[in-house]
Image (tube, rainbow, N blue to C red; front, side):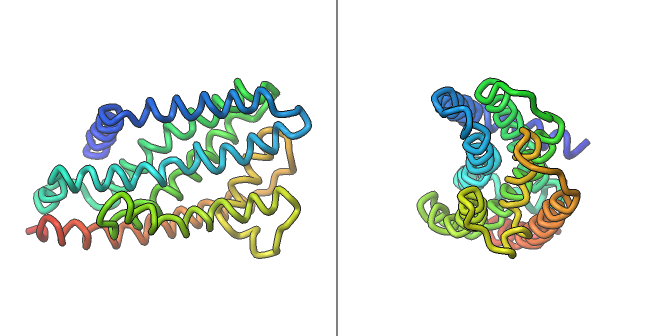
Length: 232
């Protein structure tokens, strides 16, 4: 029940600050781009778009959300909050991942306009977004401002996005296959008919999710206590 109320509050917060509008605007732009991409490249372009934007937008937005909460003094109440750290993290990650999943599926449905495995697509985007948003929250807890966050999060963005982009152009290295961005990109590709299905990609993505949540669960209480005092 606590998680449900936290999730609903996060959705209201995101609506209040226009995150849904931004997702809709960006999704519309990418659908328009896919309309003019030649058919033989459409699936590859769509898979990269979904990886680098709907699946990773949470990474950008979570920094803004954390800093907005910090600026409004909400973190000062951490000491009396009934939420456990993992509930706080999951509420943020799930709420942003739902939007990412809807955006990614709409891009394929309207922009690609070919048969796709929307169940696999939706699950992969959702889990991938959870991974990246959780890592983003971990990094945001160290940020002093939006500009500072953008500097801190750049290595994460490169770590996630660069290997699959290189792989899409045939410039892959063996260790790329265990990276979360490549695993997600290949699952997205499978869901829209680009490549074969392998269970180990799902295992890799879930392992990265576990790492992200574990690190962030340990970090968030420390950051909150610094701002709002320790729990009694």
